[in-house]
Amino acid sequence: EVQLVESGGGLVQAGGSLRLSCSASGFTFHEYAIAWFRQAPGKGREGVSFIRTSDDNTDYAVSVKGRFTISTNNAKNTVYLQMNSLKPEDTAVYYCAAEYDPLRIATMRDNGYDYWGQGTQVTVSS
Image (cartoon, rainbow, N blue to C red; front, side):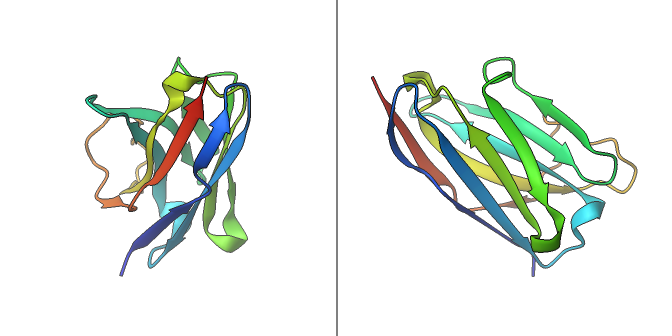
């Protein structure tokens, strides 16, 4: 059974940092693309960052580029999202998601993410 479990959310002041973790199980890590998405109240879901360990491909939303860093610990099947210089507009529920990607064609913007975690709340106060 595929499982994704996020952790690391919380309340932080603007300018602060958080590190989110996504622990994955039930699938072969390097055959999948993993992405972080977020959804703020009253807004649609937004792709934040993407990583594919099979070719070290990463991608970021323009709104977080230079502030967020995605990385993996392949031995632990865990994906991290280091979030620095947080802004109130980063407040959202953050989800990690996985897409089977043996052909290495997945992106952060496609609709092929079949597996999702339960989400973790990030709140940035001004």
